[in-house]
Length: 297
Ligand SMILES: Nc1nc2c(ncn2[C@@H]2O[C@H](COP(=O)(O)OP(=O)(O)OP(=O)(O)O)[C@@H](O)[C@H]2O)c(=O)[nH]1
Ligand SMILES: [Mg+2]
Image (cartoon, rainbow, N blue to C red; front, side, top):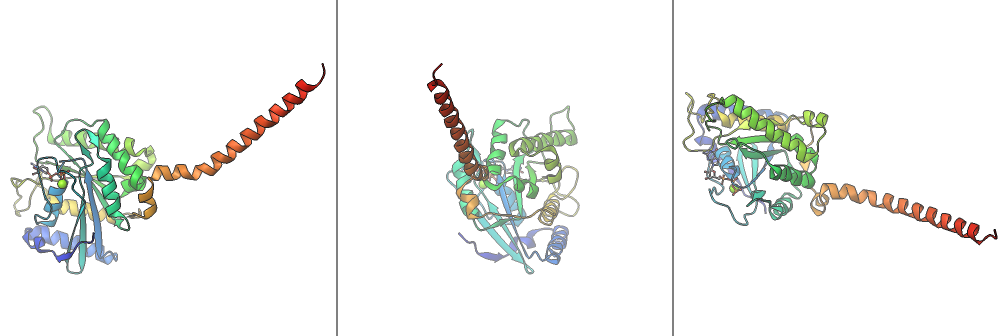
């Protein structure tokens, strides 16, 4: 399951301005004794997960397809440069054909066991108007598998960021409405309390993976506001990796039973004890009833 760590050839393909900023972020990580980083990419099918991995690595490392992918397994891509290693794990879509793909989640869990997730990129599309019950269910499935804490290590990545909203909406209004509704869904699906959710402060970052993405004056792929999105995304990844919250270590226990089930299991002895006392009380009541009814009137 391991993946070969290769020299990061794609890095040289980035424009000089992007390279400079990425080196700055990786130096910051190394100063904090983080010589490697593991980023996991999850989300529904076809939202642009694999394309985002290719954009970040600067090479065509994982397969991108406009059509539904069948039975794909997670793939880890590792690249090293100047003593720093980045591992990016691309995963199969968690929603396909209108259902949460639990089989995909099982494969992801198995793949991640004994690994530590420094950052989760939860990917969706910017150019979609609604969130629905399935969005909530997919967040719930991730929470049940990896625990609520995963959301403190998450960035919400919105692809197709060069999209033009309908006439009556500005880009800023549309993107903030879209990100707000997705963040609300994450809060609902993860069952985080208001405070806990605010503490997790999930940042939203935009990505445009299309080859037709426009460029700024430094030749970097840019968002409609002119900002280079790849350095923005790497900066956000660095911030999440170094925030105060612990990285998510996926252990066997997490894989064997979902988080919520595990918490339920801890209650079993208490439930049995409570049942024992209730039965004893009922037995006692019956005995005293029998005694009373046995007495002559
Ligand atoms: N215009 C545009 N197209 C994109 C973008 N990201 C992905 N696409 C296209 O959307 C389609 C699906 O992209 P993928 O990267 O394969 O999506 P995925 O989430 O990995 O899909 P699965 O692995 O099947 O779940 C492909 O045709 C991509 O070219 C984007 O930011 N902008
Ligand atoms: Mg993919």
